[in-house]
Length: 230
Length: 224
Image 1 (spheres, each protein chain N blue to C red):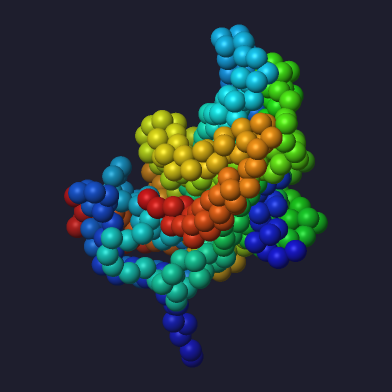
Image 2 (tube, helix red, strand yellow):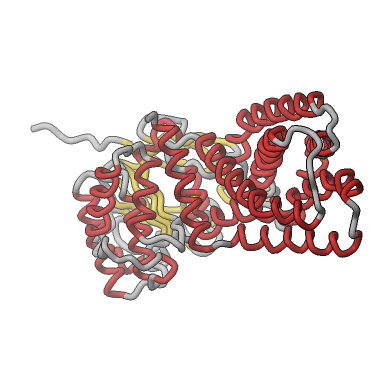
């Protein structure tokens, strides 16, 4: 019988990120296997968003190393990563389709027809109507969050980095989003999800990663704060 | 079409679409320039001869101040909802974004110039004694000088708290050689004198600063 060895897709080693005198990350070291959904939890200021932004190449580490899919330079693998931030990262004055068609071109889809097809498919996958002509600025918060998730999924990434995807989203929509993310994980994608609504991920997340004061203080399979944490 | 060219084109079209819908930049620029033309015209009431002497300075200072409005708007759109981060995490080259922004601003400021120049001619009773086509050349080179530096410094001041004040503070000193060349070239052409030296200076300025901005833009874009 052969045993499947989990492949590490993200590893961080002694990662430190300082903003002036404030250290947002204080020596984070961890390895994460592929095809799993990781919920990153912690109080405000624990360093969750900074860790996610550092993985997304938006923050440069003050010291330490980040390796994603075997590459230490984010630019080499950016095609394989999808990022959803707390703000929508969408233009309010354009419709969902217009937004996504533009972002599709940034990922090298040059044909107009292919841009439209890819955008339609991903908008449908998050349960929105691609023919909705309203500008994104007039969407409800829940619709905007789902469109933002669609943007992150647009390039069919192997790794998804999601910062507070459920904030201001009603319970029904949030549950739908969790189902979609679980299906995405089941297709072999690796998902890192920062949230304060951890209970939504019970049964869906493979691991809960607990952060405090810029460090990972524990990793659990159940939604139970580790005893090492304060 | 190569990927970077396609991204530049897509970004330019997106910016034109956003401006068409919001009209944030063009309305403010038009209103400001109109005020300058009318107020100065009533304040001085110059003769045709005096107009030829002062028009170069007046026109370019008006366009410089008006351009700052467009330059601030161009990046304001990108930091609303932090859309710029979506660009930064994508594989799209930084310079495709920069060139698209410069071209967009060039179109906005050129449109403003096309609308305002007839008003300047009427209000200041301007008649060029030199070849008028050279004025068009000066306009193109001068506008490029303003927008290429302006777009770059607007991106630099993007993350500062008082970026609307910061942009003129950074842009105006560095634009002095270009502004001097634009004003002197315009005045020389209007008075029927040679403007060759000033046009060559403008071409050199454009080449140097376009190259420097292209070399440094990626660093500015990814600065924290």
